[in-house]
Length: 263
Image 1: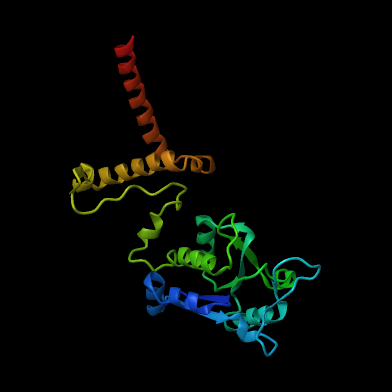
Image 2: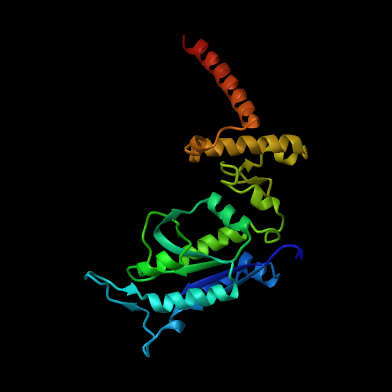
């Protein structure tokens, strides 16, 4: 690890730490921890309960179904986590939060600060904790889950892979889908022919300039077919415009040929 890089700390406050600990011990995340690039821990909110039953929830004022997470144990848990990493940003997993996307992941990763994830359960979290101790609320989609644990793991996985040194090569993250507002190009590996479908010749040519152009075109095609809405968010680059002009000319040529055949 580069000693100039600051190790980023990830803390998850949860009622089910075993879920998070299992996540921290495998794959890319586990390697990043073992290589001392990041530190990560799961803290059981119930450890900060105020009564002998270790309860962390209670009935909502005003009536209604379900239970609400009490403010006292959650507040103490957050403040305890902040003591270990004062600069950490506290994020509540919530369906009412800002929708999570690659841009948000890049911002969290580039900040290179600690992140504390609060995983709610039951009907929600006491509003006084949200107003006083939460820096941001993030949602991974317009649906409701039983708790924030899976959502926190989605965000952590996405953010960690953007931290320098975590992936095998930093170019891997740079080439990801959505990194430049487009879907990633198609991928091929061995064997060169699978079920009578060959790998595109250009990828076997060794001509890096042609391969780069093929990948640009593949990225554009996949974005057009699968996520055309992305073109509404990001303008085309000069390189993309050149490719589109070429496609436009080819389509015109084919249109002229078809016109001669049918008229």
